[in-house]
Image (cartoon, rainbow, N blue to C red; front, side, top):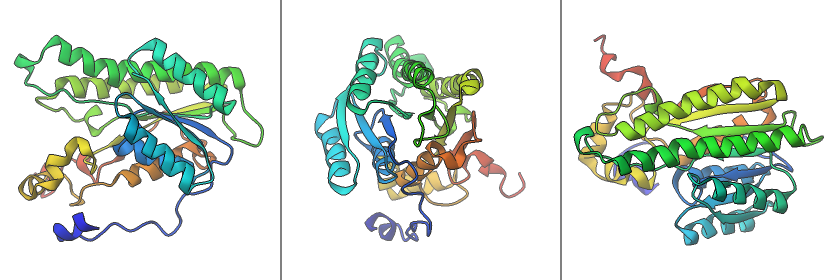
Length: 286
């Protein structure tokens, strides 16, 4: 790919045994699916056999492109739905629409998230509340509605051996402090404990909830870091594996965690970060 040749890096290869076709007849909602990680998760779930509700909050055009790609390039169906996940009535409307369209829901991927960065002393209450509202309250609202539906529908024969799966997209900053981003780090740390507590509470109903925590992934949200050579070199000091991650790598993990291949995994966090959480400052012995 052009990006990797530009930076003189080896291009990541597709795995020899991709996790495809392991979600036949399943139905999914992916929030924040119009771009970046959410887009790739939605597409890869569809490649694995799931119909997808492509949620967006602002960019209808981009969300429609994701749904169109799914409808044209896979055997699955997708539709778009506009909803601000921080608003309860809009979340309920989205789940109702997905149920009406699909008949049941098997997978909910809580991905929608934003950043509103500022030093602590300059951060406004509005900046703090907006990030907590979308990143944390949004995952609470979507997870709560998912559990309500999963409990009611139970295990659907010939679909999955669980009643439902919740996948939360968090961040390495659920454990790594981040100066200048206290609202974002607080939201992701909250998400981690939210999902683990949900997993503990609903496991008895054969409902699974797991977390994917990406590190530096090549998405629009951090384009200034990976397009600028000097900024990229600084970033590599934090990543032992010495490359940025690709959205499809998160997508593959999401497919696996949503499938019956991971049925005994519940309340777990998978870090997709090239080793960023390995305290790279100590890689030479400290």
